[in-house]
Image (cartoon, rainbow, N blue to C red; front, side):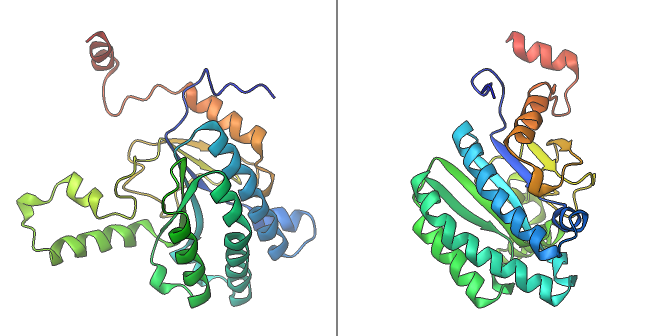
Length: 245
């Protein structure tokens, strides 16, 4: 496949909702756990390709705060896969100079997974080619509530609270907002994901289940993104005037 990355506009920050593992498995007569394992394997492929392309920030929705409602056995599989992923992927993160970051309430995670996350984040803290965010035990509404609570605890007055102050208290502080949000499996909703940060994100929905969302599908989404006319609330006339100066 021809690499068009040198000629097209790429997102600085790409966010992914990795959906459809269970349905992928069901279509093949497999247990849901097999779908989650196939999805985890696909993470390696997509992360490496995004790093190769020069995308600076990649955020993956790994486990939402609502996922605790799933069957206990499925949750155990997901956390087992997380631990295995962190152990197996650490050498690749180091080789590709990728820094791991976690978004979410880590204190609510089981101790083994929390310890594994903290270890990999510590080891990769100085890596600088790409930031890989894992949104885990994450919910956007909870993130905003947490940020507001922190601001109140700091004693700021109402007049001192700005968009910048709120953004500085989010899990993604210091990072650009996602330019593109991709959701696989045909669902067309955010599911409590990066609600504040995605105010002006572009969205791309594909019916492809996450385990089948490979490099070709990723490039199709990036090609589509490159055609978007991003206005950020401006009229075409305002955009033209800005370009003229």
